[in-house]
Image (cartoon, rainbow, N blue to C red):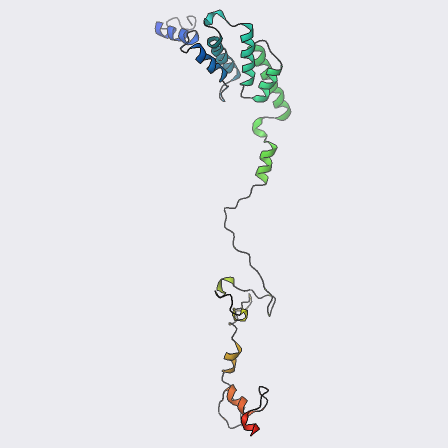
Length: 232
C-alpha cells in the first residue's frame, strides 16, 4: 500500500488493514457465512476466489495471519467449485480434486473455454424444453369471430342469420327468415296470408275484383271440396 501511495493518510491505512485482517464477526458467524457463500453473477472467478479465501481465514482460524490447515484448504477448494455460478465448470473442478485455489481456477477457466469452443456461447443456445414450450405456445388473447355456417334449404347457398332467430325454440323453423348472399329475399309468409291476397278476374267476365275465398265458392273443385250451392 505504501508503494502505491506514500502520502496515504493513517486512517485509510488502518481501514484497509482492518478489512484485510481484522474480523468483525464471531467465529461461528464467519463459519455460517462461509458455508452460505456463492459466486455472484457480476463477479469474476478471481474475485470469487479472493472473497472465499477471505471468508475461510475468519471461519477456520482465530488468527488470520497463521494461515489455513490442509484440511481447511480442501474444504475451501470444494466450496469454491460447488459455489461457482457456472455449475458445469464448478462440478468439473470439484471432481478433479485440486490442491489449491489457483489450480481450481485453472480447471474452471479451461472447462469454460472448451465448452464455448464446442457448443458456442450460452446466450446462443436454448434448452430443448424451452424450445418445445415456445413452439407449442398459442396466443388466445385475440377475439375470434364465430364461424359462418351454411344450411341446406331451398338453395345450397342459403345462409341463416343466427342473431335474428326467434327466442322461442318451439316456434316453427319455416318462419325463420332466409337470406341469400346474392339477393335479399323477403321473409317467408304462412299459407293463410297467401289466401287473403286479392286477385283480379279475367277481362270480359263482367265481374269485379274478388278474393280467393269468394272465387273458390263459385267454382267447383278449387280446393277439392264442393260448395253447398252445388249440392242443392
